[in-house]
Length: 594
Image (cartoon, rainbow, N blue to C red):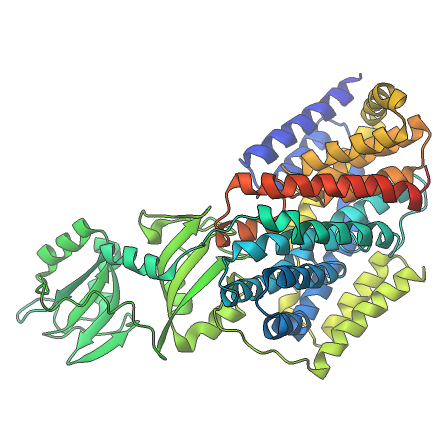
């Protein structure tokens, strides 16, 4: 191999290691690979940055905006509300409804958005059925990935393989060329999830409110302001208890009244009883320095925090895929200032974090239990950072306004399906109409786009080009062909599927497809089989991230909420991957003759 080919090998191996170890964010890995290829001269500058002008990247960006428009208009929420109202309490029926709805939504909108929208509905339905949320959350996440296989715009891998075919001089896949295989796979996957899979999905309880509040009491104390204390007449801002003692004021009790969620301007008076949260040693230091005293044991009311009335409520939140404060602590993100609430507990990978809550760095998928003023709950529901897993179902009725984004989506998809224009062009047209008709406010357009995903895809596309120009893809394809030729073309398709599926468990499905697509084209040419059949297998395998909680963001989102363990995804996702493989090997050669 040439020196340039070895550089590409190094980039591929290095990227796999970095993806698996998560030492860098995925988009950071992509940019690093791009820089190595550019600095070593393996690809020239125009090629290095060609990915940012790729039709696939443009289409993905447009679909994010179209999805956001549908969400803004409330169309998906109306579906979720209907499931909650009419779904009943049988887990098997609820599983069917959720998988079909999330699958249908994922065929046309971002599958992560579909999961986010239906997560609260799944949790509410599980509680109504007196079952753990895990029973419905895993089918929901898997259904979103299966549904993405139905159309060209359902998931980035479908767009990327279409782009790869066009770049190689072949006819790209059309809008609904994925429908026959996608429908068969969704049907088989649904059958598995309501039969064998339903018995394999673990029945685990997620974060428990009562337990969380009980454990929080270990860090609560009541102190009284005595006569003569130097702090009398000062407000909480002046006292600076948080930076000085690492103490938070939760409530103030004065003359039989209860002041919830006091502001920084609240003044302390003689006789006030202050409910504070902090480490025992810090609270003791507070009493010694400030001259306040612990309330007597007979006066202490440990159940005050547990009361939930019309003025205060306890909510369960999930840090969503667009969480803007990723990696910041509760204190750094100023949660209390932004939302007026108090974080009572944080769960990660099914385990409650027990160190100082305000110092914990929040990551996507973390579950937070918070106590909020009831009047401020709407602030959280409107935030793009969190998913509110409300225990109370809210009725969302279809509105005429919902028809506008649905019509725009139908126009964009219809024009592309009729070959009037490329899906990138019709997608941008749809995104523009979403903004012009004010379905999505202009100031929220940029927030609707998952820039990390776009950067990752655009930065890695030159790696696929380099694999072809250096001859590496051809060499790998020839080695695979020589090994599998005696076993026939079906074995080749199976090998490509397994390789792509294993990659997508460890990295973004888009990254996996970018790496495998050039090899797949080389194998098709070397073996003498249709490239469309090979790349259809690559696209399908790229959406089978069922076996790890890190393979897809839908899995990340349900991981903590359902109290899953890593092994659960292997137990349920492994057989499902095998089902998808078998169905694909039957359907793909029929739809796309070898």
